[in-house]
Image (tube, rainbow, N blue to C red; front, side):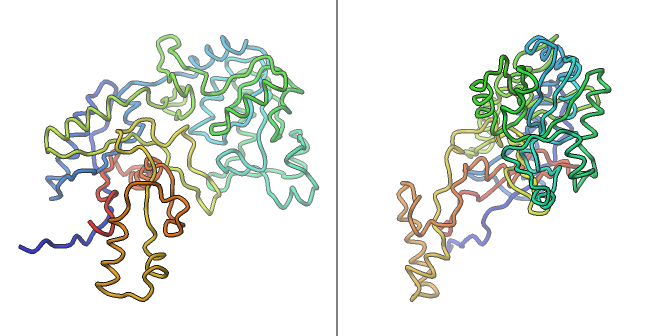
Length: 400
């Protein structure tokens, strides 16, 4: 029988699972859910398929939770409980407000320093046009709350309508803590107010800590250094602390999952035993993409994937088909063109194509960042009920 050419490339499927609770055998549940989906939908697993799990169900199965009182106890123990500079937080009720509640409970006064015109992931609290009109230099100017209101008035977030400046101010006061708010983009600006600093930025945190220490700060900690071990029996994250945490209830957070490489290897092994296929498995959180409308960069987690099997290490090594078609093989068409392009792809020897003209415009991002973004968009952030995503054909190319 003639070997038929496959007409479909990458397919991403959300897989329905039961609601996961603390202590559940997640490896078994994920394995069963994928195999049941394959049977009911009539597809087969193949080598190099990718099974991805949201970080949320991993942390839930681990029972990785903490209360605002746990955060307060750790903040007080590590930062002294007096005046703390809390700098560069993101503007988020889900991601940061609940952490701020715990921080405020562990301090007498907070000097809250917000970056402007937006936070690190693109949530805006000021307008570039007004900055230009007022002759403000965001690289050097430190604004008081009064000056901010004078220039920008109330600037609620586009999608949620929340004025985060007032929201964070009130939240801190409600915890019985004094608050002063300033706006600045230079980390060392906080040192004019206090020498004890908690920097809350995510992807720029190492540089911020370095600049503060060089500027003479007495104590500098990042969010990644709070709740790195259990407090009063709480959950924790040894590597990322409070980074990647989410609001669970009004008084409780779900932390980013703890070490879970063994989990992805366990699922990989169970699928191999059940089907004979060698799949890859990863845990994913936020996808790493930017929204052109709201200017928000999605990545509020410290990494897209905290754990993955070894076949997902590295970046794609792809040729741009349209470049080959328009340049190297511009005189060919039909079957001849198809064969020439297929031969070029087959001739790739695994060495890096970076710098090769035929690879320009391809995306040399980490495989886990690309696949994690695909999975995040597939699972959505609401009520789809598919915390596991099966990606098939991702490693196929034109010749498969």
